[in-house]
Amino acid sequence: MPDEEGVVYRVDGPPGAPVLVMVGSLGTTGEVWDGQVPVLRQWLRALRVEHPGHGGAAVPAGRGSLEALGERLVRLLDTLQVPRASFAGLSLGGQICMWVAVHHPDRVDHLVISCSVPRFGSPRTYAERAVAVRERGTQHLVDGAISRWFTDQLPISQPGTPAKYREMLAAVDPEGYAYCCEAVAGADLSGDVSRLTAPTLLVGGGSDPVVTPDMLASFATQVKGAMLCILPGAAHLANVEQPGAFNDVLVNHLLGSAATRGRKVREAVLGAEHVARALGEATELTADFQDLLTRWPWGDIWARPGLDVATRRLLTIALLVALNRPEELEMHIRGALESGVTQGELKEVLMHTAVYAGIPAANSAFAIAGRVAREHGRPGT
Image (cartoon, rainbow, N blue to C red; front, side, top):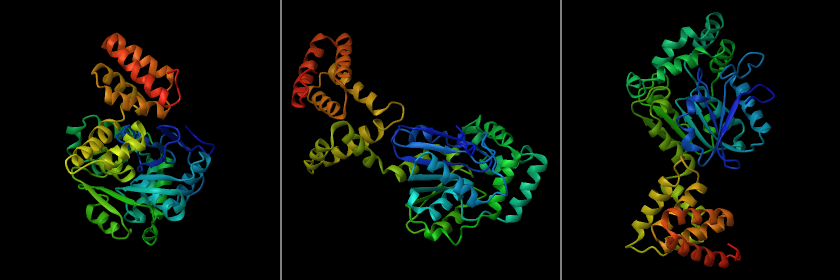
């Protein structure tokens, strides 16, 4: 979806959720984040933004600069009425996110910089690449890029990925690619990154020839409180090659640990008062079990992206009816009514269970639902 400036973007995730801006690497489109978005959209509104000339985005007039790319991103956020967001940037995208975090710190919640540093190599290298691309297009860059982006193991673990990224790079508009090369050539945030104030995570690939682990470790010393994670078995597009490990550190940085996430979901489903009481009543005997409950069912299973929380809530009620778990059923019905589940939705779930779990089970469930509803001033439920 383009904005008035021809900036192409895509949004995934529930309306009203916190926004995560995701900016990819030079030569890739927003598809570079395909391994992350299904996990993130359970919690966040993922906003993927294309570089000029990438994914059909318009190329601005003039010479490319990091400042121009950063301000372009800020204007998009203004257009979308996003006053503050978290940012995740890969390679060139990392530099753009750094620039925004330095110059517009009030717009940045959390910062994730992957396979990126304040300054990339020699400016002359990228200036010359811009000239070459304008003359010859991007096809001649493909072999070299693939060798930097991925290790030799990727064709074995993900057979179709190299071909996909070859086609992706070859399809980038040469003028847009050259514009971004000019931005990289002139980018040097070395004297600015000490001003970063947002909680920052630096992620790199253990086999990245562009941003080596040593380079990233040195960068981490310049950012107060920065966390550093190097992923073995990954080159420059570490999030593509090791999506599982990348997602783990990304989610933990943005959303907290499984225990933190689990408590949020548990409170959303059962109510904060109930959760506080359950955790507050934990003893030496039961504390570990409460921790297991928070991390596993709530932090891992309920938080999986395949089903939303509303669907899992109704599914759980049906299962508890079928399994004849009255205490658990009452707790979940109470949480459902407090969260806004309607009379019609609850009735349909219980009617459906009557077919497959039996009339007596459904009859008991209706009795529990009626009692809980009366407690909440909804006697018609």
